[in-house]
Structure formats: structure tokens, C-alpha cells
Image (cartoon, rainbow over all chains, first blue to last red; front, side):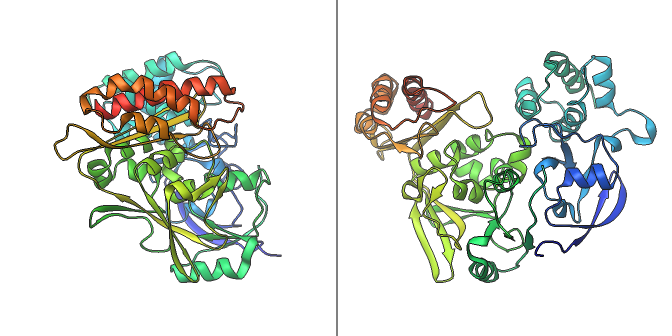
Length: 159
Length: 285
């Protein structure tokens, strides 16, 4: 049947080279969660609105729920599991902990990755930059105030 | 949600892409960013056994100045256009608009061509491009055709692109003395309303020679606010803010509005008045 054939892709996931044979219809989130075993990437809205499934592809945030896995070919994928280098929390993660910027934690992986991408683009984002960039990451525990506090703290840090 | 099975074709030339679309007919769709298409396929609203990926076709993603026009490739992502130096310089209102589309992830994947070809009524680029007198070029096996942006979108999810054709680029005339603004409003990712106001001033920069106002998202396609445009034509540029409220009222009375989950008809007409006024004020600010 048409579409059953697989396509070989080679990508880097959290610094580890991966070679995978994927069907065209396979979504990046499913390959990451079910085949690579990285379940920190969360599926929630499934329509690119909530940001829970955010991963960085070549440093840019994408909705892995609506990205074909074949699009990762030749790219560098960062998931939440790759953020804490050598088991030590990244500065974004530390800021979230220090400001209590999470409650249930379901949105947190996407939030942390979005903030990492934001800080890579703007080392010292303004309040407007922060709100604009994070508009697409939803938190159902209404933790936005503390999330914004955490990001403001990072924005103010000397680098 | 699992996608249905499909075959992915990745041609490296537009002629090959067109041949693949012709071969598979209604079973095939062009595929670029996938931000609209993959969602519709996940929900089984659209079914295609073949997707023809256009991202490996060279020359479809760039932006260039050609004579007195800016030519925007259909495969340019919203994110790329947001920061493209030519767009920022020649069409600052477009750069500002594109930075407001959906969210950072959708902008990174979604393309201008996909946005226009999908013709979701709640979208930002069509109204502004229509007000800027943009033209849309589609390629088919028998050659290329050009449509004005005003004509291209026929109605919700319907355009003049025939099945098997590929939207290749958008051409925007570059006009001296043009003042443009796009304002949008909505509680959701997609706009409830988006209004584009484009005023072309006389050579002396003092009088509005031509006004183009397009109201997007409240109806099935971007609507021309003709009576509002007439209220602006010949007006002293400095007096535009004074005329803007009357223009907004005229627009609120004249444009087609569909009641939907985003609001009832009277609410949407109210929004039209408010946002036409704001767009005009911003255009001359």
C-alpha cells in the first residue's frame, strides 16, 4: 500500500546522532516519545496552539505534534531531556525552580525550551519581547505571573 | 493524533512537482510548512494519498526586488519574512503584520504560499496584501497565471488556484508616498478581525490620492470598504485622523460579516468601525 515505505533520516537528538527509518506520516513527537524514549515532550492540544510539544530544531521552536519526523533529517533536535547538561540544571530551569514557575509541570518542558530560544535570540528581552515570544505557550495552572518573573530575572542577568 | 498514510514526494524542480500533482490528481496536494495541511489531515478533513513537498524546489523561498515590485517566494516562512531586510525596508507594515501571525512555532514552519492557498478566512496576510495591490502567481503544467490578491481568494478555503497548480510567488508593487498599517484583534491564535489601510499620497505628500481598505477575518474573504475609501480620497493627509471615525462607520455598515464562534454580527460590525479607525490613524501616525 502506498505510504508504507520508510525514509531514512539522520539527525542529532540532544547531541546524540540518530539514524531512523520513518514513515512519511510519522510525527516528530511520536518518534521522540515512542521510538527514542524521550517522553518529556508533551502532547496536549495537538493543533500547534498550546506549546507543550515544543522542541527546538536547529535552535528554532517547532510544534513537534504537527511536524513530520522526516523534516528532522540533517537537523539538530533539542528536547527537554537535553537541556540539563551532565545532570546539572540549565539556568532557565534553575530560574523556573527559584521562582516557583511551575505547578503541575505539563507545560514546563515547552516553556523552558521556548525561553531558551527567546534568550538565544534576545539576550536581554524586553517585557514586550517576552510576552510576544511566549504567547504561544499555554499554562492551565495559571502560573504566568511566576513564569514571567523567572524570565524577567534571566533577562536582567549580566551575560 | 495519527496521520493517515501517504506517500511523500520530494521533487527538486517545479516541472517535476507539477508533473507529480498532475499524475495523482485529486489524491495529491502540495506540501510546504504543513501548519494548515497536516492539521486538516490529522482531523480527516482533508485526505491525500500523496503529498508533494515543495521545500526542495529551488527559488521558491526568496525575496527580491524586481523593478518597482517586491517579489516574495511562496515558500518563505512567516518567520523569515518578519526579519527579511527587503521586507523590513520596503514593506514595514508587512514585516510588523507577519510577526503577529499565530505563534513563534507556526511562524517558523508556516509559509506565505500555504497561508494564501489554504484561504482560511481567519488569517492575516490576505487583507494586507490585497490592500497593497499584491498579485499572486500560480504555475500549472500549461504555464503561469496571475491573479490580483482581491480576486485570488474566492471564499472560505477556496481560491482561484486550480488543483494541480502551485502558488509560486506574490508580487507587491512598491509605491512612493504610500502609508500602510495593519491592525488585528482576537482572543485566539487566529484573528477575529484584521484591517489593512493603505493610503497613497500625492507627490507633494499632502493629499490622499488613493485609499485601499481591506477588512479581513470577519467574513469569508477580505472585503473592500469602498465607501470608507471614498471618504478618504482627496482628504488632506493631516486630516485623516479626523475622517477616520466616519470612515470606520461607513466600513461597519458596508462590509459582509459572518456571525460565528468569534462573535455575533453586531459585535463584529462594531469591531470593523473601531479597527478601521485605528488602522487609518496608525497609517498616518
